Image 1: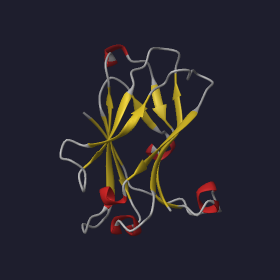
Image 2: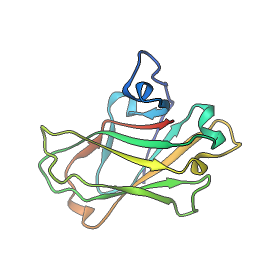
Image 3: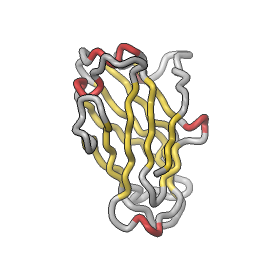
Amino acid sequence: MRSACAALALVLSGPSQGDAAGMRLLGKYDGGGRGVELGADPVRIAIPLDARACDGKSARVTLYLRGLRADSGAHPGYRVLLIGRGARAAGERVGEINFYGIGPEVRRDASFELAPRLLMTRQRPCAVVLLLQPEGGAGSAGKAAIGSVEIWRE
């Protein structure tokens, strides 16, 4: 299994859509500007979070997958699982993404609501671990990627 873990640099410069809507960015992973590559193997992503994420007190937490993109090849769907913390041991299913209708010139975003309890922890540093697990015929997967994975809270 490939591991996509890296240090986090919180993006705090300038207002964003999330800030304007009363949301705050808690953590972001973008592979050092390269994004997250997807293929036939599961991909694990660790996203260090701002400590405010770990109290579980927010009204709403949202996971954003920004800049979904793919080549013109065939692509499996992917299960998005939250690993650890308040989640089940095998992973808490957050949702699914697919690349239907996405080609070389098309980008798309996806978002999923998360129960704040799933982020609660007393461990520091606070982090979220996601597993992107291919479904079905992933053996001949084309190239697909996600520009960034972000956690926001209300």
